Image (cartoon, rainbow, N blue to C red; front, top):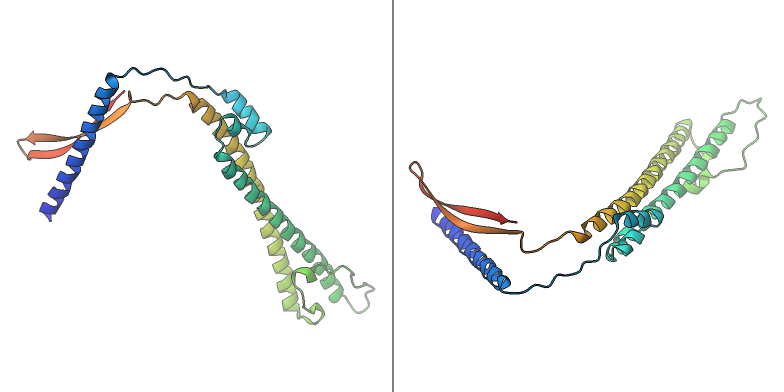
Length: 217
Protein backbone atom coordinates (compact mmCIF):
# COMPACT_ATOMS: atom_id res chain seq x y z
CA UNK A 1 0.00 0.00 0.00
CA UNK A 2 2.88 2.36 0.86
CA UNK A 3 4.49 1.60 -2.49
CA UNK A 4 1.31 2.56 -4.30
CA UNK A 5 1.09 5.84 -2.39
CA UNK A 6 4.74 6.58 -3.16
CA UNK A 7 4.20 5.83 -6.86
CA UNK A 8 1.15 8.09 -7.02
CA UNK A 9 3.04 10.87 -5.28
CA UNK A 10 5.93 10.46 -7.72
CA UNK A 11 3.56 10.68 -10.72
CA UNK A 12 1.95 13.83 -9.31
CA UNK A 13 5.32 15.41 -8.69
CA UNK A 14 6.48 14.62 -12.21
CA UNK A 15 3.34 16.17 -13.59
CA UNK A 16 3.90 19.31 -11.51
CA UNK A 17 7.48 19.51 -12.71
CA UNK A 18 6.29 19.38 -16.32
CA UNK A 19 3.80 22.14 -15.66
CA UNK A 20 6.44 24.20 -13.93
CA UNK A 21 8.81 23.74 -16.86
CA UNK A 22 6.11 24.86 -19.27
CA UNK A 23 5.51 27.95 -17.17
CA UNK A 24 9.23 28.78 -17.20
CA UNK A 25 9.38 28.28 -20.97
CA UNK A 26 6.36 30.50 -21.46
CA UNK A 27 7.94 33.19 -19.31
CA UNK A 28 11.14 33.05 -21.40
CA UNK A 29 9.20 33.37 -24.64
CA UNK A 30 7.19 36.25 -23.26
CA UNK A 31 10.37 37.97 -22.09
CA UNK A 32 11.57 38.19 -25.71
CA UNK A 33 8.21 39.35 -27.03
CA UNK A 34 7.15 42.96 -27.28
CA UNK A 35 3.63 43.21 -25.93
CA UNK A 36 1.55 46.12 -27.15
CA UNK A 37 -0.74 47.68 -24.54
CA UNK A 38 -4.38 46.71 -24.93
CA UNK A 39 -6.87 49.50 -24.62
CA UNK A 40 -9.68 48.43 -22.31
CA UNK A 41 -12.99 50.23 -22.37
CA UNK A 42 -13.84 51.39 -18.89
CA UNK A 43 -17.37 51.09 -17.55
CA UNK A 44 -18.78 53.56 -15.08
CA UNK A 45 -20.10 51.85 -11.92
CA UNK A 46 -22.40 54.83 -11.37
CA UNK A 47 -24.00 54.43 -14.79
CA UNK A 48 -24.26 50.66 -14.41
CA UNK A 49 -26.00 51.08 -11.05
CA UNK A 50 -28.39 53.71 -12.40
CA UNK A 51 -29.26 51.70 -15.51
CA UNK A 52 -29.94 48.53 -13.51
CA UNK A 53 -32.08 50.45 -11.03
CA UNK A 54 -34.18 51.96 -13.82
CA UNK A 55 -34.58 48.71 -15.77
CA UNK A 56 -33.29 45.30 -14.66
CA UNK A 57 -30.81 44.00 -17.20
CA UNK A 58 -29.91 47.40 -18.64
CA UNK A 59 -26.76 47.53 -16.52
CA UNK A 60 -25.71 44.12 -17.82
CA UNK A 61 -26.23 45.37 -21.38
CA UNK A 62 -24.12 48.42 -20.56
CA UNK A 63 -21.36 46.12 -19.26
CA UNK A 64 -21.74 43.95 -22.39
CA UNK A 65 -22.50 40.86 -20.33
CA UNK A 66 -25.38 39.75 -22.53
CA UNK A 67 -25.20 36.12 -21.39
CA UNK A 68 -26.52 37.17 -17.99
CA UNK A 69 -29.82 38.46 -19.43
CA UNK A 70 -31.50 35.03 -19.87
CA UNK A 71 -30.58 34.13 -16.28
CA UNK A 72 -31.86 37.44 -14.93
CA UNK A 73 -35.13 37.50 -16.85
CA UNK A 74 -35.63 33.79 -16.27
CA UNK A 75 -35.47 34.41 -12.52
CA UNK A 76 -37.82 37.38 -12.81
CA UNK A 77 -40.25 35.40 -14.94
CA UNK A 78 -40.36 32.44 -12.57
CA UNK A 79 -40.86 34.75 -9.61
CA UNK A 80 -43.68 36.66 -11.32
CA UNK A 81 -45.35 33.37 -12.19
CA UNK A 82 -45.11 32.29 -8.55
CA UNK A 83 -46.64 35.60 -7.46
CA UNK A 84 -49.55 35.22 -9.88
CA UNK A 85 -50.17 31.58 -8.94
CA UNK A 86 -50.08 32.15 -5.19
CA UNK A 87 -52.20 35.28 -5.47
CA UNK A 88 -54.88 33.40 -7.41
CA UNK A 89 -54.91 30.50 -4.95
CA UNK A 90 -54.99 32.90 -2.00
CA UNK A 91 -58.00 34.74 -3.41
CA UNK A 92 -59.84 31.48 -4.12
CA UNK A 93 -59.40 30.12 -0.60
CA UNK A 94 -60.03 33.49 1.02
CA UNK A 95 -63.35 33.78 -0.82
CA UNK A 96 -64.13 30.14 0.00
CA UNK A 97 -63.44 30.76 3.69
CA UNK A 98 -65.63 33.88 3.79
CA UNK A 99 -68.57 32.27 1.98
CA UNK A 100 -68.29 29.01 3.90
CA UNK A 101 -68.29 30.87 7.22
CA UNK A 102 -71.53 32.60 6.19
CA UNK A 103 -72.98 29.29 5.04
CA UNK A 104 -72.18 27.65 8.40
CA UNK A 105 -73.79 30.55 10.19
CA UNK A 106 -76.92 29.95 8.14
CA UNK A 107 -76.71 26.17 8.52
CA UNK A 108 -76.38 26.32 12.31
CA UNK A 109 -78.97 29.05 12.75
CA UNK A 110 -81.64 28.72 15.46
CA UNK A 111 -85.08 27.55 14.43
CA UNK A 112 -86.62 30.97 14.94
CA UNK A 113 -83.89 32.78 12.98
CA UNK A 114 -84.75 34.72 9.85
CA UNK A 115 -81.34 34.27 8.21
CA UNK A 116 -81.45 33.73 4.44
CA UNK A 117 -79.17 31.25 2.73
CA UNK A 118 -76.26 33.10 1.08
CA UNK A 119 -76.25 33.14 -2.69
CA UNK A 120 -72.46 33.30 -2.95
CA UNK A 121 -70.93 29.81 -2.71
CA UNK A 122 -67.39 30.33 -3.91
CA UNK A 123 -66.20 27.44 -1.76
CA UNK A 124 -67.65 25.12 -4.38
CA UNK A 125 -64.87 26.26 -6.71
CA UNK A 126 -62.15 24.70 -4.56
CA UNK A 127 -64.27 21.73 -3.41
CA UNK A 128 -66.56 20.81 -6.31
CA UNK A 129 -69.14 18.02 -6.26
CA UNK A 130 -69.64 18.21 -2.51
CA UNK A 131 -73.07 18.61 -0.88
CA UNK A 132 -72.26 20.72 2.18
CA UNK A 133 -75.87 20.70 3.34
CA UNK A 134 -75.45 17.04 4.32
CA UNK A 135 -72.08 17.32 6.06
CA UNK A 136 -71.62 16.74 9.79
CA UNK A 137 -70.50 19.48 12.20
CA UNK A 138 -67.08 17.82 12.45
CA UNK A 139 -66.71 17.88 8.67
CA UNK A 140 -67.85 21.50 8.53
CA UNK A 141 -65.23 22.50 11.08
CA UNK A 142 -62.56 20.57 9.17
CA UNK A 143 -63.41 22.29 5.90
CA UNK A 144 -63.45 25.70 7.56
CA UNK A 145 -60.05 25.10 9.15
CA UNK A 146 -58.67 23.78 5.85
CA UNK A 147 -59.85 26.85 3.95
CA UNK A 148 -58.24 29.11 6.53
CA UNK A 149 -54.95 27.22 6.55
CA UNK A 150 -54.78 27.18 2.77
CA UNK A 151 -55.55 30.89 2.66
CA UNK A 152 -52.77 31.70 5.13
CA UNK A 153 -50.31 29.36 3.40
CA UNK A 154 -50.79 30.88 -0.05
CA UNK A 155 -50.60 34.36 1.45
CA UNK A 156 -47.19 33.54 2.98
CA UNK A 157 -45.99 32.06 -0.32
CA UNK A 158 -47.18 35.15 -2.19
CA UNK A 159 -45.40 37.50 0.22
CA UNK A 160 -42.26 35.36 0.02
CA UNK A 161 -42.39 35.55 -3.78
CA UNK A 162 -42.49 39.35 -3.56
CA UNK A 163 -39.44 39.28 -1.29
CA UNK A 164 -37.60 37.01 -3.73
CA UNK A 165 -38.49 39.34 -6.62
CA UNK A 166 -37.09 42.29 -4.67
CA UNK A 167 -33.97 40.22 -3.94
CA UNK A 168 -33.49 39.50 -7.66
CA UNK A 169 -33.86 43.22 -8.37
CA UNK A 170 -31.22 44.10 -5.76
CA UNK A 171 -28.85 41.38 -6.98
CA UNK A 172 -29.25 42.72 -10.50
CA UNK A 173 -28.02 46.13 -9.32
CA UNK A 174 -25.16 44.68 -7.27
CA UNK A 175 -24.03 42.47 -10.15
CA UNK A 176 -23.96 45.37 -12.61
CA UNK A 177 -22.09 47.61 -10.16
CA UNK A 178 -19.46 45.03 -9.25
CA UNK A 179 -19.06 44.04 -12.90
CA UNK A 180 -18.40 47.64 -13.86
CA UNK A 181 -15.82 47.97 -11.07
CA UNK A 182 -14.03 44.83 -12.29
CA UNK A 183 -14.05 45.87 -15.95
CA UNK A 184 -10.57 47.38 -15.57
CA UNK A 185 -9.23 44.66 -13.28
CA UNK A 186 -5.89 43.67 -14.75
CA UNK A 187 -5.14 39.96 -15.06
CA UNK A 188 -1.76 39.12 -16.60
CA UNK A 189 1.19 36.78 -16.20
CA UNK A 190 2.82 39.05 -13.63
CA UNK A 191 0.61 37.30 -11.11
CA UNK A 192 1.54 33.62 -11.23
CA UNK A 193 1.63 30.69 -8.88
CA UNK A 194 4.29 28.01 -9.31
CA UNK A 195 4.13 24.63 -7.61
CA UNK A 196 7.38 22.62 -7.45
CA UNK A 197 8.57 19.51 -5.62
CA UNK A 198 10.88 20.11 -2.65
CA UNK A 199 13.10 17.85 -0.57
CA UNK A 200 13.51 18.60 3.15
CA UNK A 201 15.85 16.99 5.65
CA UNK A 202 15.57 17.01 9.44
CA UNK A 203 17.60 14.95 11.96
CA UNK A 204 14.38 13.57 13.44
CA UNK A 205 12.38 12.52 10.40
CA UNK A 206 15.16 12.34 7.87
CA UNK A 207 14.45 13.15 4.24
CA UNK A 208 10.90 14.14 3.38
CA UNK A 209 9.40 14.89 -0.01
CA UNK A 210 6.90 17.75 -0.31
CA UNK A 211 5.64 20.59 -2.47
CA UNK A 212 6.72 24.21 -2.68
CA UNK A 213 4.20 26.89 -3.67
CA UNK A 214 5.52 30.27 -4.87
CA UNK A 215 3.40 33.27 -5.81
CA UNK A 216 4.88 36.04 -7.97
CA UNK A 217 3.24 39.43 -8.37
